[in-house]
Image (cartoon, rainbow, N blue to C red; front, side, top):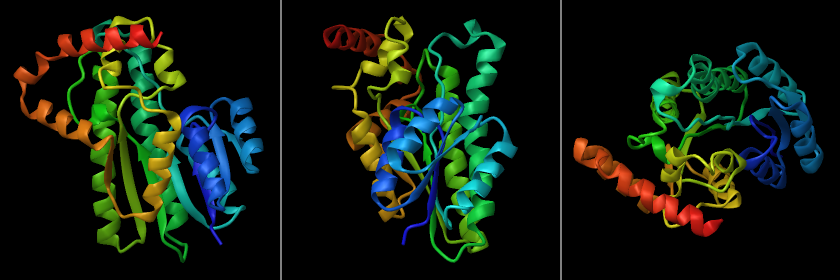
Length: 264
């Protein structure tokens, strides 16, 4: 019988959709979010438990691991919580820069550490899923701090997997890198010029598409999964192009602005 699963940022978007799918697979879900009411709503939806959790607090992650252990052996931990700001990095207030770094990167590190501590004593294979981004694969002017955190999440995920392999621990790490998706996180920036680049793909992904792909990773050993795959090839090629690749950013923003306007 499947064991327990923890999802951070489970109050909305990817987190809620992932929690729904984990529950459908038979996992007992602990839905966590800095918004206690949103976490409770997700827990009610999936028949699980809720906990208020600020991912910047390492002790809160340890408490979540303990609470999940009361539901069963901890088998899945999803580091999903994230924030995004879309302004030039030198225009961001110091506290906004710190928030992005602490939530998007330290939150993943603290969560992964708590997960490993809880999972390493278990008899079963376990999985850690880290929500990265397409911006982890290339420079993204206008989202410099956000992209930096997602680059770091990708680097951390691979290095953590190496440590786990060296230690002989049966824990598989996955980093999923979705393209722009139609989430509240993105919609909050609909009127910001710098955010137009998020819309430069053929379309925004749906929350369900990303959640399906994320949970499907539990049946694989894949370390990095890009959604959609073809955009990943383009992102990596753009990164390798250096300064020449950076010069495409204004064009991508114009394309994104037109597509965002058509979508309303």
